[in-house]
View 1: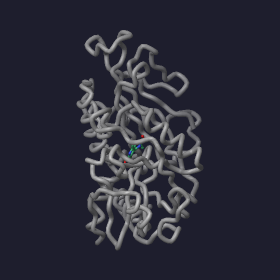
View 2 (view 1 turned 45 degrees about the vertical axis):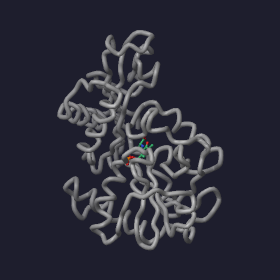
View 3 (view 1 turned 180 degrees about the horizontal axis):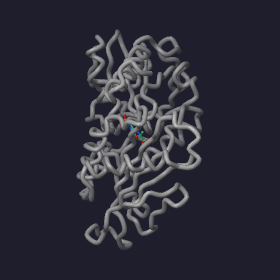
View 4 (view 1 turned 90 degrees about the vertical axis):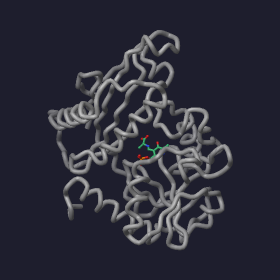
Length: 300
Ligand code: PDD
């Protein structure tokens, strides 16, 4: 089904969702965004996504022209408009929510003072992956593109300036991989083009620290909180290639897909080459906690 979008206060259908070519989001990639999702039409961890959005905006000196409550209301209105579409044949799928704030309309120069920020919210079906993704796991390619230096466009913010990530993903796709894993400028493992990476070794979970130069993933953060409650020690740790190749299990974390088992990297098998028991257990519990968080315990 087609997407519905909120564009600067107006909700419209996908084909009418337009932004000026003079918007600095288009001209310079000057903007920030979030990707959230629903479970049973309830946006999940929206408060955390809005906190990260505000932090990203602050890092590029971008004023967000709406309060959190106003954004939440606009998200809800966009979801409602999506569900009211005449061709709304299915409502059992989950929704993908993208919130963007750009520097907005300005001159053909970098002067932010004359710009009027744009706010866009896109609601569309959350794409359902092939079941094999979760059942059999995926393969990664370690790509030559390195993750942004923290002193450059900082990986800590979710910026619309995504050329690095797009090129990392293109390289991975050329190699037939599901995701492209980037190292940082020091050669340590950082994260994938659009997901965080975790390894399991001797029953414990490890993931690169924020200082490695990564996006503070919301799924990553939630997982680091729940894993110890499930008896799985979890820590941030510098990871190198050998930590990944020698891991018992590995997986990705991402809002739209939760946990995705990784079974091969650069053609080399990780662990047994099948999704591991701790990955499966955490996946199951992650979903259960998500249901509890939206007030639907026991619902799958
Ligand atoms: N991607 N790292 C990067 C570079 C990302 O772009 C994302 C999310 C993540 C995972 O973060 P989270 O758990 O908050 O989704 C890690 C989103 C979904 C995207 O850009 O489409």
